[in-house]
Amino acid sequence: MSFLFFFSFGQVTGGIDTSHSKQPIIKVTLLGTGTPQPIMERFGPSILVQAGSETLLFDAGRGCLQRLRQINIAYDKISALFLTHLHSDHIVGLPDLWLSGWLVSRRVVPLNVYGPSGTSEMLINLRKAFAFDIRMRVEDDKRSEEGSKFLTTEIQQGVVYDKNGVKVIAIEVDHFPVVPAFGYRIEYNGHSVVLSGDTRYSENLSRFARGTDLLIHEVAIAPDSLSKSDPQYNILMHHTTPEQAAKVFNTVRPGLAVYSHIVKIRGLTEDEIMKKTKAHYDGKVTMGEDLMSFSIGDSISVNRWKNK
Image (cartoon, rainbow, N blue to C red; front, side, top):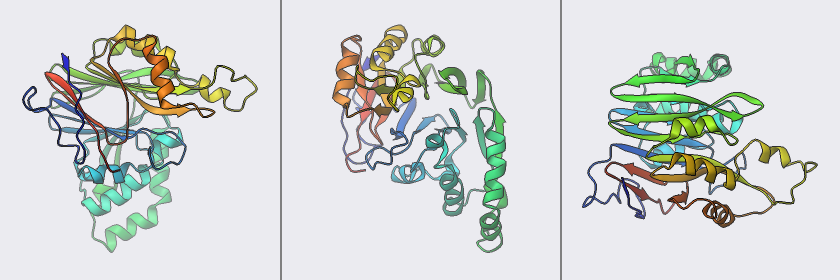
């Protein structure tokens, strides 16, 4: 596969190099590339994957519904939601996605949700917490009650979704003490994308990701002097350093590696992440941004959104 790097400013649907590639087989959009830090530049973790007739959402961090609105994807177009784990930054946008999305899109069918153990209990209790709102929207706003429901599947490693030629494989990763935590591999028409979710260095992820077109991986950077007594030391220990990510990239050899869920401790920068990565990896890698999208086909094109 060849790799083409193009910047398209404005609508993410523009910018595909049609002279070199056909309509993308898989399109991936980074809705949110941030962490629990409440900053405007990077919303909470959430990634949209469009393949064939399937529109799949992975995690629902802060602001995911607003990002979906920016790219003109309504809640009723989401085929399924997949959760990597139940840390709040990956699910805090779910009530807004679900309730506001249902209200404004007039969804009439339940949302399929796939996630780790604990997902069913969380969603049952969300419906209890918002029972008054649901009742009012049905009785007063005349919304379909079916559209407010979830169909929940608690998953283990392996194929968790296979529909219309699109296959989603859950991958156990190492986000200890958060157990289980998952990454995902999405396959369609001979192409694939792998999402790491939150993880430390994971050989299992590398095994499942080998040969993928696009690998979206989390990263965390901290000063070498960070001590075990530092309150942020455990944060680093739950994530993947640039050097460790480079080791994954060297094993997987993706067409393109992209960083998301970007953790920067004690003032270190994204430039320092890239410098440390490139010291150990000579392949193609880029720093993800909110609303950056990737079109995968005979080549990979990268499209950047100018005004978030």
